[in-house]
Length: 427
Image (cartoon, rainbow, N blue to C red; front, side, top):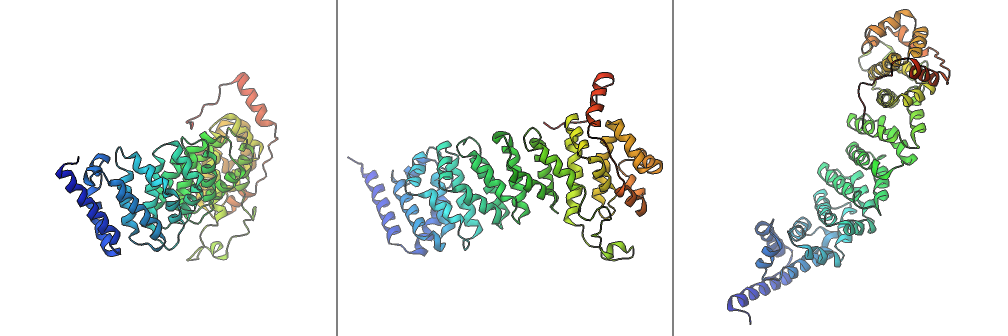
């Protein structure tokens, strides 16, 4: 038989629940405020003590009201935070199960897709989904089975809240690990984010793809297309993440297409005359020259990427040579419209000239003694010493290296000379 103290505690619980059941929006809002203030961070035993072993009764009411009102944003932030107290309680696995049994995951995912709701409310939903995912593999699978990847990818691509985007990225990263059944679904969902209009979303998606690439193995053509577009982004943080991902693709079947596309990007539309130059750019007295074309931005990033990838191995460098990369780099160096193209083109060209003597010979023949001496003296800055006529001459130079010369050169070095050394490698 319950003691007098226990009976009194039960009576207070019943009164509390009755007040909740009969209360309207304002009264319930006050109850939630008080609950959040006094119970945040409590463990399962502490919550049960607070509710006289009837905490699940209050959780059931919170979840039921959430399902009834989430479309109207009635105290939604407070409701989600209150439910989060139960789901995050140490030792409170049963609270999680109770929440899931009445469709909690579906409700949270539906909240993410409602355009009229606040970004902060969606962020709270993501936090609760993260608590679900943290519970283990079968709970990650439940989120994915409920079309969670699509909902989260859409939120990442469209959210106007940087905090919500970051929380969404963390959750997608979590769903992509320790979840082999849906790992590729998460991977494809992240690729689908890349064409969106949000640079922050692109950056976060590329970061997560880089972390997942080794797990998923082969890369689909859609990733290559989106990566090349990211290299043409005017946002340096997006370019950086794309460059970080490229080396992971070298061991994969997509490698030939990747190298070919990078070399093609070195020659923008309008070459060799760079016909797309505007009159304001051609006029040295112009006050407002136009911003660089996206093609030029992509050209500079491609030149930088080629330098990074060539240093991965002699084989990659030779493949690039056979794709006529040296001529493409000379085009980039000669692009006076865009100084980053000149700088990155020069740095990458330096590697090929210093590594392959036959490339040095052909470049010298193509550009002449004067320009070549400038290049050898200061490869990082030589382009600043060229006038427009010299730059255009360089961009228009025809450099024809037989496709088999790269292989031949490598064989000769292996047989009779010191092996090529590299200053660094990516792992």
